[in-house]
Image (cartoon, rainbow, N blue to C red; front, side, top):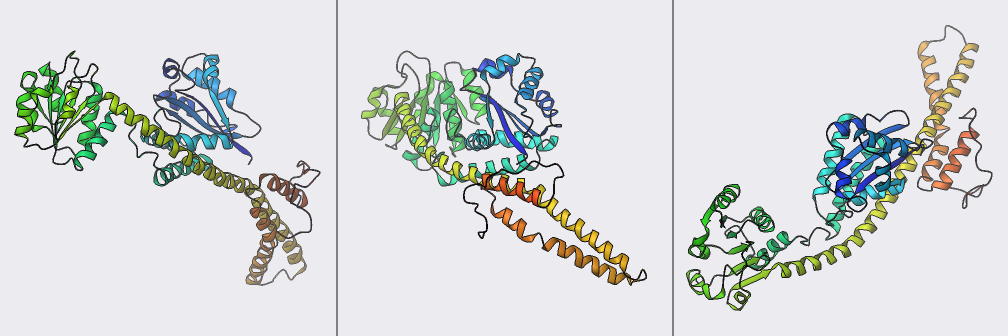
Length: 442
């Protein structure tokens, strides 16, 4: 291939958030980077999220664009190039391809398997397409990356195990109640994780939400946001029996719900099961609730244990995902190698056409100048057809070597020299690659 793929980036592993913030590429900064496309840099795509900033480029083999990109990136962000260089990672060629596939499949994320990164990359790609900086190679690379991510989600369980406290709580609720579309939850307190868990529950089909907080205004705000109902904090036990699921995250130093307070609640529920999620530290819910019939209580340590176990499962699935990526990188490499054939194939066909026209003109000069035009046209068609057909076998031979980089480049060089496609072209290697013995069949 006469062009190479380059990737530069910062992520949560190589740079602290204060550095990533300084080099973020959004809005005008992204367009300023895109304006670098041109000259030795033929294609460009920039992506910026809270955990990573990356630039993907395609440039001439002879022009390594890394220094240029670092300087321009730092200049656009009005920061020091040395600081960027200190934290920046660089991948070239197939390693850049592998990294793109890994990131798009969410194998390089803080939370392996999270789905947000795929949407963010698609947005960055759409921007590059709109700006006209993503062309043949990046278009192919990004579409392949999207299909690889889909294949990994289909063929592995990388996204099937809850790896956040709030989502783990929702998965447990589903295990207990099977369906949530006829269930109601109560949110006690306004903790971030409890609020997020409530959001996940509603997304899973929860039919209703009660919100209680020591500050009633805050409860009313959350209730409005979740289309629920605010409950004054002193009236919790008047409504607790209405809730199938209770999520608690207050700052109370003593339990808000005690086991001794539950019998009247359970009686009103006619012993229908209740699920309590205590995400507070210190705990809001008396651990003795676990001794009551049809009551299921999980605290933050229980949920963390589930999350850690699921993370281990995701890591196992990630090994399978990396094998899929290895396979797909090989396929993309074969496409790149075939792409490198294109100039030689075009030149071969043009060479055949030039020879055919030259010989046709010689022949026509010897014939009657008043020769019928239809006969001349038929002769031209025949000559050009012969010119193309004579190169069919060399072209087929080269195509069959796609994916065998060493031998392919040798045979491309030999073909160009054999047919004099480069007036001052470089000489081919003085030795043949292994397995390319002369005289043998394809």
